[in-house]
Image (tube, rainbow, N blue to C red; front, side, top):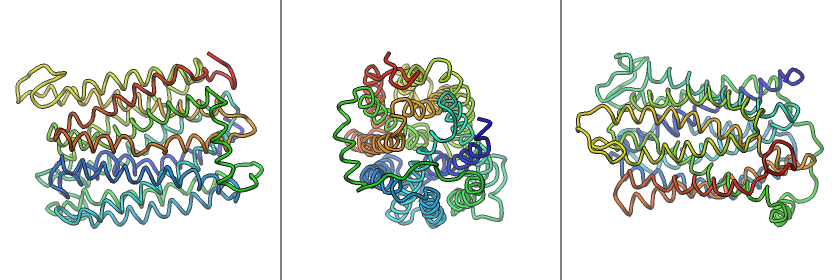
Length: 440
């Protein structure tokens, strides 16, 4: 890492800058606020949110790979990142006008645009990983990047909980009204998560542009769409890569669904306030940062495949616990309605979700490096982006449909278990990843 230390830190700062969008807005603050306060009905809000995520996922699946392939041929990756980060910032600022009981379509459209821009930014950032160090260092770099990003999420979430996000009594986590005279009755403290995320991105994306140059590579030639089609046609000939793309497509979709609906689920099933959900998120992020970093060492020692498999088994077990726990039962065992046990179980589950999720994503980036050909690494990460977005709509769509059919939030979350399991099964056909081309 020494040779690329400055570039690596700049690259990791992009994770730090962007993580609050996913932490504050997608998961722990804005999403539950939208369903419980803007819509006013958690079950109906979960359906609306699911449809928005599904539509956005389809758009990312269609345009993400094309934009990535086009950027490879035009070059100037940093310019592409600047453009999509700017769109993310503008949309985050616009979320301020998502008032309690107000328009529903406005925040859905604005948030969908912000999510599209943020995810597209990640496509370009992830494709830079192979240029940041030697092959044996990539697992550590990827793990450190996720950990550093999670640390940014922890700091931003702490600030929101302590000084801005209010509970039903109009107080923050430390018992004070929202800072700067924000109106608690209009939930301005919680709504400020959007503008504060925008300001955070503006400040902390600076090290990336100062320290990290564009990838040093020869630009691809020819039609980006034609090249993408040719690559897709050749996939069945590489069984390990094909299986990994399919596996990661399913389990990353499930993980994103779990993140996106975690706060909404806790608000609807346990009746948690924004501050309680934020505390849950804080614990999950701390565990995620620690385990993503330690997972980088496990990745270097045993390879990413074992790390991925272990993380998936943990996530499946935790999801089974979550969907069988509510105010009156824990793992389907009846308890007193006034018991604090469900809250404790959910908090512990949050620790494991954060730990397994962070480790899973870091190891998956490393695995993609091992699966790709050394002289076609950008193409490989284009495929990885395509796989990540090709069914990005599936988990939220299934959650929305099952929630609507059953009218039950707990049953609505069950599709993520099936997606995690399917991803785990496909992993059996993936080479170990301890060296490019090495079979298990």
